[in-house]
Image (cartoon, rainbow, N blue to C red; front, side, top):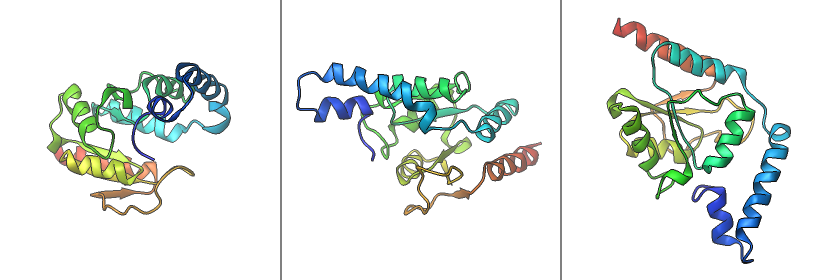
Length: 175
């Protein structure tokens, strides 16, 4: 599902007038159950560190609200790894609209033709294509990802190491 952040969904769809209380309850449950429902992935953390060692700027564009993303990044030991963070709270138009990707590029001061947007959903790939960046479809996690993309990404990586190998080849060809 793509659209407003989780807080936007609650505000737009809850008929009860206690929307702010519902949002606080959501965040209490999210924080309490996050570690039980989502596992940290050391391969992805190491991949991000590898990219940073290569002086490649790394950002994240997500439909999550800032508060839930902060909870997730901390729980997954990924806080402080991204130079740009664009959340559902930071855009008017969620993915598949390219607004978030374009904001990240601007913040990172990176040209679209020198960028790649890595995503695990059709909306990610579509947003990247509309932002005129290379796209990479990934399905390296065990759940919550598109297995087959209906929109063809420029690249497809089935494992974290496939992306690392691609980057290493590209960096070596620039030397």
